[in-house]
Length: 477
Ligand code: SAH
Ligand code: SF4
Ligand code: F3S
View 1 (tube, protein in one colour):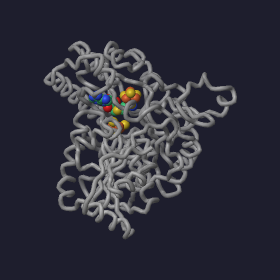
View 2 (cartoon, rainbow, N blue to C red):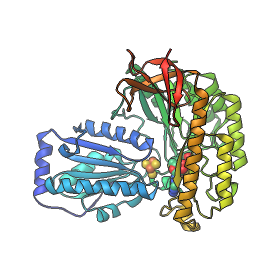
View 3 (tube, rainbow, N blue to C red):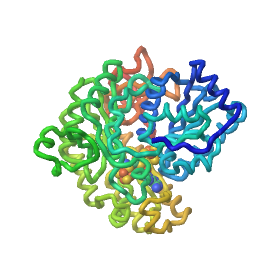
View 4 (cartoon, rainbow, N blue to C red):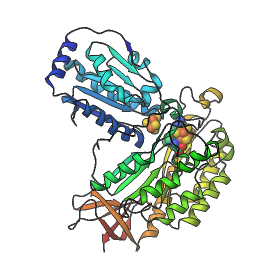
């Protein structure tokens, strides 16, 4: 399993062994990238705790530093490389510190990362976290260690995550891993491997456990939650039609999964991310409409408003299909918050394609959006097949136009809420003022209101009196 390279000798190794034998070994875990990565870090924390590590929030006192990394865009990797420079300084003073790179960048670069970043001792891909204690042992023996093997079954279903930097109210639960979609711009299928769904019983148990501990909101995570399909035995993704009659009977799809989680308790809110326009069914929407605790919020990335660009992205839907999905959401779930991801300047995107993105945004009016400039990623289909031919300046100016329009829409939608009363789950003290609390309404908008005697985890009704494009401001009624 473990690929071992480059023997290392010397004082650092001896010092390491001393620290580890003392039995007070500490691990510092840092996460970059998507929610899935933050959720994985909680699995890693659990595995390391079982191996005798305690978690520290101070990297300077750690014996082991693990950085869970993201490769989605060039600048995501740059951020990690800059961070590694900080650790370089630490390693000069404390050479025995072990540094491990986890996650998508580890998977993408593999052993090459050890060459490019000489201070790194461990490279571990997203499916190899159970092997981390062994990888650490290899380093203690004076070697560098790499495990980037992707799995067809691993879902870490049996591991109880250790909640890191938790507010005690909201939490993530991974329901599936990997992605089989092969959008041409995207590195995820290469870094996370094949799609597989986690056993629904373990998902419901984890949500129930969180509820028992006082949590009041869970977000179910997957790269394409609508294609969640568990069948007896589990393993790689299969289409429902390819299951045997027996398997079909016992299988659980995404609509059935959210219904099971919703039934845990009406006070446990459920969100999920990410929905995929090509796979989102009316069955899911009807289930959402049926249970109040299934939040009225859908993150439905569009990427581009132009059907020809969508085809080139291999997204599996057209502009018209997407708008039909929006229509269904509006019909089945009145007052549903909708957000999206949008990419500007994908290969061959013309001014007309860009205008189609703008016009689609005007038709949908998203509550919120994550907006990016296209960043070419090595080995993706787009990198191999198409030219990254939209110049930087054009990408930037199109992105600015998209961001400005989104801000206008967010503000407009928030203004419509003034005077309304909404139910808010309190998450904590507002960053802006110690006298204010913040939470979210079901549509996922942040709501700020005076503290009073309220506390995190409570539900309150707030009358909206004011707003910005980013937040609603109100008073408890
Ligand atoms: N599985 C999710 C997306 C996960 S990645 C989905 O299909 O919607 C999150 C977002 O990053 C994507 O939706 C996309 O907007 C953006 N993204 C992915 N690859 C990118 C790239 N090469 N350049 C710019 N943005 C990218
Ligand atoms: Fe990437 Fe597409 Fe999979 Fe999302 S659905 S993770 S964008 S390949
Ligand atoms: Fe980044 Fe990997 Fe998530 S590339 S966005 S951390 S799946």
